[in-house]
Amino acid sequence: MHSTRRAMALFLVAGLAGPAACGTTTPSATTEGKVTIKVACQPAKSDPRNRKVWDDDVAAFQKLHPDVTVVSTDQQPCFDPKTFGPKLAGGQMETVFRVPVTNTQDVIAKGQARDITGLTGEIKNFGDFSPATMTPYSAGGKIYGIPTSTYSVGLVYNRTLFQRAGLDPDTPPKTWAEVREAAKKIAALGPGHVGYGEYSGGNTGGWHFNQAIYGRGGEMVTADGKQAAFNSPEGKAVLQFLKDLRWSDNSMGTKLLVGWESLMQAMGSGKTGMMLGAPDVVPDLVNKFSGQFADYGIGPFPEGKASLSGGEGFMINPKATPEEAKAGLQWIDFYWTTPGRGVFDYERAKTIGNPVGLPNNTLFGDSPSGKKITELQKQFATLPVANFQPFTDGSAAIPAKLEPPKAQELYAILDVAMSAVLSRRDADIDKLLADAASKANTILAKN
Image (tube, rainbow, N blue to C red; front, side, top):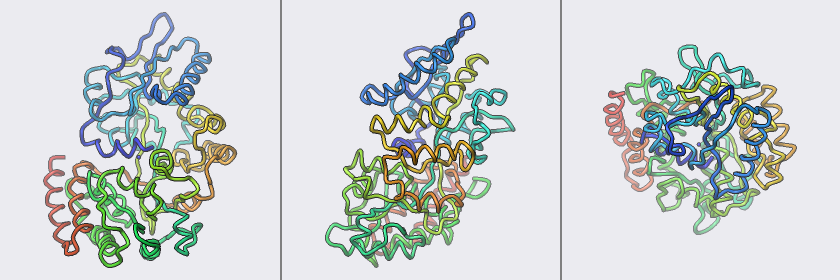
């Protein structure tokens, strides 16, 4: 989930939303062959470096397309779950608007995104998208959106602590047994050291439970989405593992970590050894929590049978004319999906001091676009790319899975189980999962 992706995931239950665009209900306009489109996600004024990059690209785009005028909205976060639904329903959405993959099917079902099936040729490398990446943006054989970011989860770890604990930082744990042993060694470094960090509340506990049960090959819900499936051997293994680390090994510290920020602070402090996370965790650890890029590595999900995945993409306002929709897709092509340009202009990113080198190529895989992005990343890398190679190599064969229906409500329920095993030595895992499943079934029955 960028750091905003993490924060977004915790609030999606609030519904679909984003602030009104410049006080108008008209998403775009067409006059005498000229088109005006409104596009989301301009960086805020408080981020002048990246705002200038955006504005420069808007000017370059308009020079290539002189009949198109781009009006940008700078709401931050770009996707705001509190107002997204009302904005869509009220006709105030931009021509080109961002949607997390967890919401795309709902938007499609409500007729709130334009069918762009006949216009996908405006995305020049459309054929390079990984098929699985397109699934959330498709329905009934038609295309309703363009993915622009995806993520999968791995094991984020502190290479410096690994070295101090006598572990090989170039060979992160590949099994849960190895994670447990590494956690013991890191915790033994001295007071305040934590081998393995985990969430326990604020919906983040249930979110990481979801990550862990997918990784072990389990499911959150049944295939029809009507019943809970996490009261299973895999679900019990998730909780038993944490209980063992907390109470048998004393390798998780004594502080309950609740929201997203708490675990990030622990990792950024330099005394916590491992956590589950996507690659974009690393810039946040450095930029927001005082970490150092050289300290962090990423490995594949231990024994990964699947990885929780997510991301965002862009859709076109259903009220857009064909000309407006075409211009909107041309903007997406220009800024969001072309290697070497827009968000993939790594040469420029390096010049202005943005980090370059995180693994983020799941959009295009091994396609020509994917290979070009990898090549550019290596050429202009500002980060220690080798630190992330275990993740790149080990994650390629792990299938991605999206969140279950009613994800945030399920996460809130499973927070209770996660908190219990980390705060009570006598926590009854069977009872915790049975109680959680009963509550989840009530919610899912309404789906």
